[in-house]
Length: 212
Image 1: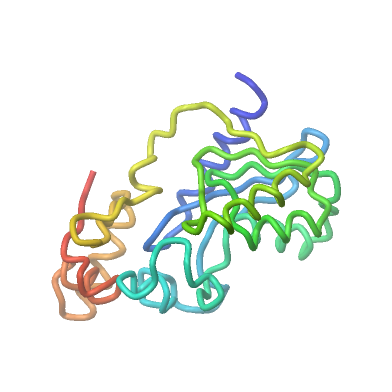
Image 2: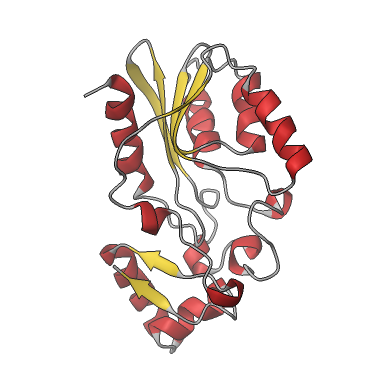
């Protein structure tokens, strides 16, 4: 197994902690062949999670299109969480590499560059919907000394981590068994069926819960 696949496998495991209603992302920071920090996407510590309706952008999927509205999203991205956690516990990140299950967005890219991260390794692609801004995005990624590199490996939970938009722009939500159980408990407390509860916190148009 290549080192990049080994670290990405750990990022995939970290990702299972994510509970965002959109994409689920895990990230690992590596320096001198040692993991110094991990992170997954979710709301700030002490706030309601996405599955509890904590983030307006994530809960109003019909209002905010994909890759738009990050400035009003309260979720902390996986790469940001990894950087913040490293700083919180006093681990220097200059010269480190980030392994993320999703190619970092604009904000995570800027943060990594400012932190002097050496390179990025990602599993799934991410693109900005506007062509002129995608070009700017690629320019930023060329600034990493170690480059931005795609890791080729199988992702057993790819569909769950990257939920597609269904017919008419509806979000089709996929979940792991333990998350389904958490949703059922929250739905029971609310007096709604699991499907109705998911629709109420995710998006009025999200009327189906897909189970693997």
